[in-house]
Amino acid sequence: MVQKNKQVVLIAHDIRSAHNVGAFFRTADGAGVKKIFLTGYTPAPASKKFMLTTAEKQIQKTALGAEKVLSCEKRESLDELLSELKREGYVLYALEQDALSVQYDQYPEADKIALLVGNEVLGVPEELLRQADAILEIPMRGSKNSLNVSVATGVVLYELLKEK
Image (cartoon, rainbow, N blue to C red; front, side, top):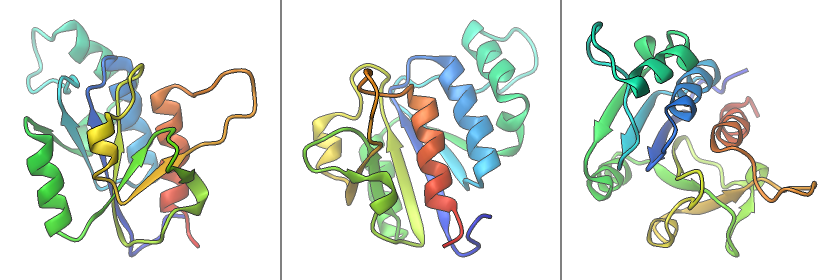
């Protein structure tokens, strides 16, 4: 059950795969995310209904219509966006493996959360991690050291929005 007083926005920075972007939309809609911000070179959903790019078609196919109902904004400047969100009272959590990270279910409580996720290979850049109020990490117990970014985002979004 989604906690009623909590607002979560998702920031997808420098995501390469349009399939991951589509998965963000579908998962974020299901979890109850308020808005998705796409920054850097992250592809965006189609703004028209004809002559779609390959990336727009991939987002549409993976999102299954969630890209039409969930608020989304493409932003050129991530720094400006982070400043705006902080002024609006959002705390910034980055999803990344880091020496300063806390387990994803041990995050500091907040009513307004901006979750920042990064590139599939490079993750969230160091300079952005240092701007975060907390860095969240999912413990890995198998032979692989990470999850796909859209899967990891889903795990954390549901944790952030669950009823406590």
